[in-house]
Length: 383
Ligand SMILES: Cc1cc2nc3c(=O)[nH]c(=O)nc-3n(C[C@H](O)[C@H](O)[C@H](O)COP(=O)(O)O)c2cc1C
Image (cartoon, rainbow, N blue to C red; front, side, top):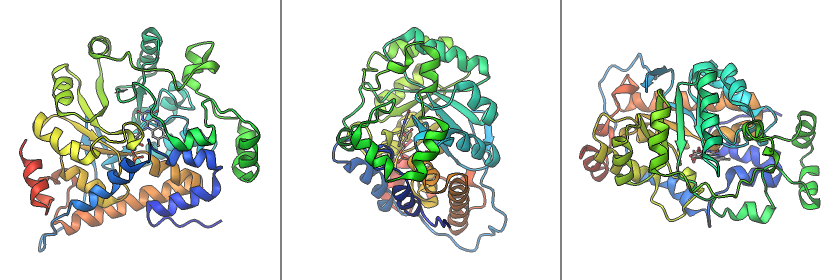
């Protein structure tokens, strides 16, 4: 099947055809009525960029330095649990693409591949994302494993004290690890290519949790992760000597406090609208947080990026580096390595074209003056 990804929606539509309904819905879905996911994307339309002319932009640089590393592109792959549901071997496809294009890939605690395997595959491009479940010692064990494997960047995700209700998952009977009853069986049978490939490779597992705890098979994704508090952050900061990033921050006060606690960066994100449906859009939170933490404190960003223009807008609104989640899973569902390659090339082309039209030749120079919208501009400049 020939695949041509000219925008993220192309990849999404192709993935929707190829994946069983339950799997597509797990990736695509969001909390409640899913309005925040839509708003995260549409808020970018309210932010306009200012074209500039008569600037020599023939040679353009898209490489960006963040937290001690220089990447070839200003975006990376957000942590996502159970990526291998999108296609068998998806984690390794992401790791290989990250290494090839020199972009970061974040491995989730809920990933389908181990901390060690992903590091071997993607090297320094792989960052590890930690969830703290019921057991703090189990979490610290994961941190020790990450350090031993050579990781230099640890992301603590703090926006899932409980897993929010995602109605499509409830309706489809989605569980992790997968439980396959008659309804799911029919869904899988009508998507034979995915199903046969998954059967041959084995149903994806929560590789790190299983390896960490012998009773990992029984890990309950819906169990509370609400014990992660400021005292845990203090312990983790003392324990982890490398780059520490706190993900899922939407409040100005929290961001300022996290900075005071000595974290190296705040990762502004509302989990792609998968948690609190009534939260602000991530882009609005970014502008406010940038104003509060000052110009130089590193801010990472995700939630709602669907084009190269959105990447540039997020940078102009105060992000130092941008991540995306679903678009990468759609690309894999649509066309595996080929889909990923097309998506990354698409974003590279778009970003390069956008900065040229703004009169910039270096992505590092993008700033609030690239914004045409005066309200956004004055907010973004307040810092
Ligand atoms: C299928 C899926 C699984 C996710 N799993 C995790 C996870 O394990 N850890 C985490 O910190 N965030 C997780 N997220 C949230 C992403 O890291 C990211 O914040 C979100 O996808 C960004 O929004 P976007 O999809 O609009 O780019 C997940 C998102 C998706 C779509």
